[in-house]
Length: 146
Image (cartoon, rainbow, N blue to C red):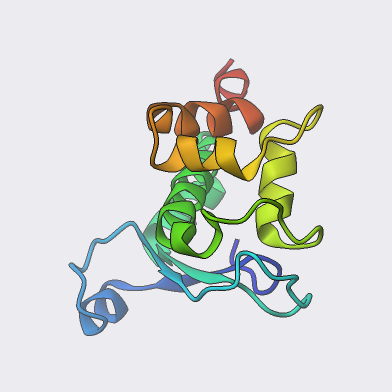
């Protein structure tokens, strides 16, 4: 963090910038999904901007649990982007091989990528309560606390 390009940009905001954007001053993060999860992205483009409070970022980069908090934040961002983009991909049968969507399908289960139908059930279907745990497992969140 902060970054630009591939999949999503991470940018920082101060109290004043949060307030100017219409949020409470101490907002931790917000996601602006731009679209394009199903399309191949250019190296310098992104599908979303993730705004993180500058004070929180400063503490995350300096404290022992900062990496783990960043992992939790990453999971929340991915879940939000999937929820906001579902209309773009829910009726597809396959994903463009080099799209952010295809990358995510491979990442959730590296041995056997999940299908779009499986992902749809994780986002809005009967298995929707297991999306976060799957992502937590993927990034090794519990192991990071050990």
